[in-house]
Length: 171
Image 1 (tube, rainbow, N blue to C red):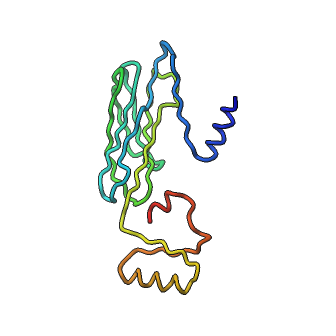
Image 2 (cartoon, rainbow, N blue to C red):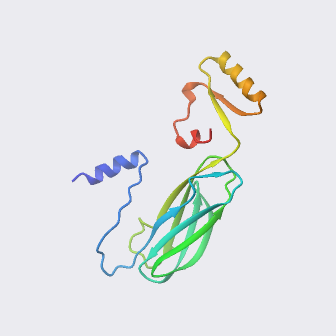
Image 3 (cartoon, helix red, strand yellow):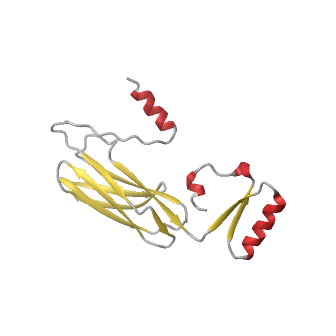
């Protein structure tokens, strides 16, 4: 009954809903079945992004890899009827949460909504500490002590605490 309203509510909360259509019969279809990356990696490491792409027919296609919204690689491929595995190697330059998106484009495809898949990797860099400065004098002393130990320290007031997990994951 209320599927459209529930989908709109989920979208407003950045929740991705994926669907699969069953029983299409003779329609040609291509879709990204799975994208796999490590859950964590260290800054400077090469990350392998693997994508399983399923096609109902053998055909040429273009597969693109986006990292945190930026196009980083494009591969022309021939998809087999069935499953084709594609890999990309990426070396992130920033320590933070990275979203890797694989997008496939093929001529013989019925639904474009299933032509992408995502995976997330937290790239860790040098350890960083976030100090919430509720009491400025105490926070300054703590920051000075941590800095004296050669630690990277950021100090902010509690009201400025990031609510985005991606920003907090860098600490």
